[in-house]
Image (cartoon, rainbow, N blue to C red; front, side, top):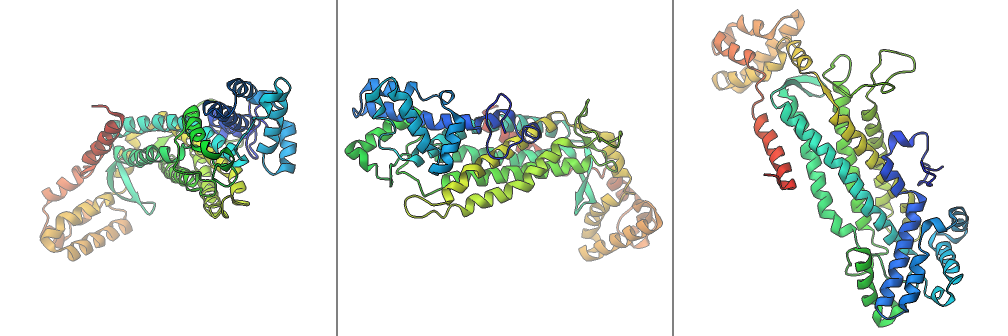
Length: 463
């Protein structure tokens, strides 16, 4: 299958489903042409680095670099040859050598000098990941900004807090949004921390010694890292995959957080709740059978990613056990798994940003659902006020008994409490009025929201 624009894509990506589950720019970054170009960028930079070290003529380096363009290669022929060779670098280097030799036979002799297939593939992948992170981070920043606006706008919008899927006690919708934002900000912090570990050169030659370059190996490596603007690690990391798996684990954490947010918003959109909705529009969220439906499309996509991501992370974790200096099978297991995980995460982030930016919130319905509980959501507040006077255990039992009576009789909890003489010994009608009339007070919610928003501002360097 091919992505729009004719660029082959990774794995079993479907042209039909890709617009739903993938972010368009990220999909292109993991297409076959991008994979090939990443490896070719390594080859071009390698030639230039070796010229800087005095190992090959500068003219040869430029001749090689001039042919390092993916569009000059026959991707279909390379794919067929990869099936026989075991990795795409072998036929890629052969094709590049032939292309250079057609115009400069002497320069062709210097193609891929001192490198191994894994150097080209791993460094090419790191280059792809660098571009991918920028695309993903842009959507995460969009989401962060949208959540910050939501948290601030609804810092005083009362809503039922729900535990175990049951109405529990009052909170504010802004605190729910701040919770999503708080987790997202941690992910952005983790991304900042892992970047320098991830975005490094892979260059070690056959067994990680750069032996074929003799004493000039380190010099070439330094020049190569400068050419590619990648960090220079202390040593090659062919069989040590923690850098890539750290990214995979981070992607898994990110998608899990996005999934939690999508689940909550989808539950709020249920007809019986109807407190928040994804934006509607022509052709969006409908049903082929039921004209009235308004389905949470973005939430569904994010939840699908959250269901798939853990297995992909597990595959990459299990593939870390790679033998000696170069692994057999474990390395190969990464080739499609990491791009697939990356694309799922990018698609989930893209949908999440769009979902939150256009979220429709119904504060009136939130308050209505609070009042529809017959005051039971204030049971904790009553017990807390009663405990210092009656004792914690007795207070809990008095309010639990009154709650059961209110449920059984379809009555307001406040009315049941007011006629209970044991409650009246400790709480006056005025005490109960203070609880039930202003019982949707958010407690410390405002403080927590401000802390999250302040943390985000500090990260962005905004006063």
